[in-house]
Length: 257
Image (cartoon, rainbow, N blue to C red; front, side):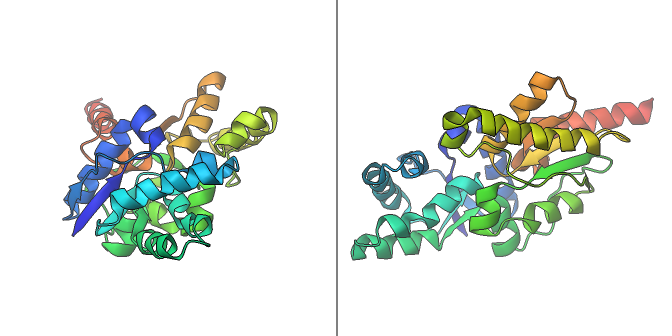
């Protein structure tokens, strides 16, 4: 099975390790992975800001870049969901509308693809003893139906998923720029809930499918000097990632102690 990786702007600039981990996970599942070098933004910032002509131009480039791909897998549910909105951009353009639907039908978020398409039940990572707070990205959950897939992979690896506030983190891309006070209030409400979840036993890791959400929440954690590490779910599930190897070293040290 041939898969084209869509790395997303945020992943390219701020979280390349998540993209590397995604490649390793896909290859471990038997996929041949390529990276179309002409890829750029999915067009979501322009679309959300109301600049639909600009968004259409970016979307046309995306379609041209990926329309020959057997499957397109994104390391972000938010950007994967944007591809589903291309139909709205091209509703009055029948030829590009057909192209948009065809590409959207082959576009998936990483954990969604692993579980729903490839039938992966677990990766080779061992997360036993880790208390993990998983955050539902709004776009991944509501637009793509990504909710149980990452949880199933984390639990199969031995992680304990903690119960905490599953409302929006407040990032929302341009929303956090235009309405920073509301965005921060939403973030702080979630972090208060995370603190409550760790009162009796510390939460080790905060994870999600979307780096935008993780940057929002991770920045809040750092400003509060709170303990949980924040890491993209691909890195957490990849046994060769830096975070996974660090966790193994920690477990060995504990065993020796």
